[in-house]
Image (cartoon, rainbow, N blue to C red):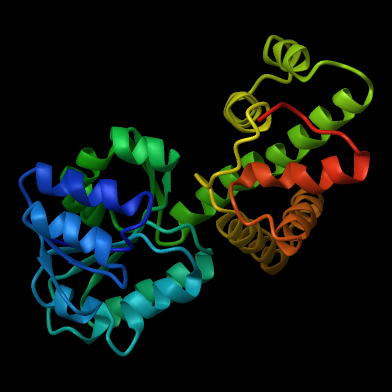
Length: 295
């Protein structure tokens, strides 16, 4: 199959490599030279714009970050919609808001093109290991068409309903995990301020009702090791929570805890902590006058 891909970051690059390894002819574009060099060496064709890609492929993936970037990729002046390929299926792997996904899907449908919102969960490690969860909104026929490619990228595909349902489900997931990261940071700072050894506190939490995947990710691998190198970027976290809060407001759903968590992450980012989501703990530590873990 002839496949296009833009958004060659921490998750996009390994996914693009899996598609090549799966025997597909890949067409890529990026403003960054390094991923293009890596993929070109593996056999990919480098293009200048999404429009150039869209004219040559059957399925076109985008794995960018913001709603604005998704609109640009698919609907912009050099976007996929400008191509003459009326058999094209566009797939957005980004976590954005349902309203934007529906608008993109409708605009593409007006040109005879298909669209799936298919946000992914599992992080860079999942992208590298091909264990992502792919959460899809769109027509069943389009999901079936993309499924052989999804199978190369993840361990399970969830078809949630029409366009917009995939990103809505992903926002629910991210709202929980991101808010939990802020709460875990507060709990660890409180425990250390109360005189508890951070490693012992983690052992208790891990063996008790507070145990979760988020705890197992952020406490031993980030808080205790003082590791704030970006795996999940702070800017991405803020964007995800903003999309969730905005969607809740439009649907008349009160989202108190995510709004509070959003302020914690905005504060951390505003103080220059732009690395991993774990950086949310740094202002909390500064206020309390303690540090959780050792470098």
